Length: 317
Image (cartoon, rainbow, N blue to C red; front, top):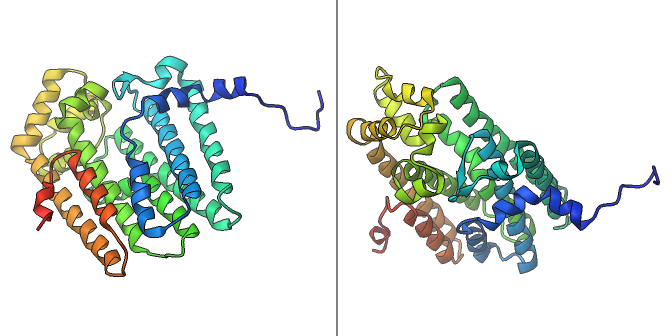
């Protein structure tokens, strides 16, 4: 063996390391992020080859982050299938996720020689881990964040990949539109709040991940935070989170409390409606600069349709 050379790698070893990643990638759901990237590119006009590379990077990071999320959440299902770490083990799954983070970085470096690519990638990966870290901290310490703190976490964790895509694209584009960063942030917030709502309300979500899985994980999601802070003297919901229960009756009681006592699901709808208006105002600003924003509006409508909280026809006038 030549000790001064870089060790040889082959396809068989690659398959071993990427096994958990490939397993999850094959059961991915709707590729919303690629659709979103192409909508932003209808404005930024980045060459298709580079757009495909950025979409691949975002997809790799998203899938890898889900591998880690499932381990940290002690999840059992992902989109109705067993989680990767139940198939490959925790250690191999974590290593696979970390490995793909660096494979994705290599692909970012192939976009061009600009130092900005490395800066943007590292900044948003730091943001992603900051967001995840605070989410875990609140869960493990049973410390309920404020809504503002939670939305800040969402901008780091969920909005980070949306923002990473837009920032990479703007390096390659002749159009520098800071409003697109604002739109990416808002879309991340809308997406996450709706996801929190569906976790507690959707039968399809229950089939894919388990009934009210956020309660079992002890997670402070948006409606749960509202319910706890609406009546801080009532400790019932905090006690449910503390137990990380799988008891269906107890979880149904918690959902009923949020629906009928604190009206937290009504608050979710009001909040989503607010950020919907914010997104449309930002899109209108971009449109006023002579840009065709029709595809971006279509993606916003598509994201809103995931929960049905905001009726799209109200914007048709």
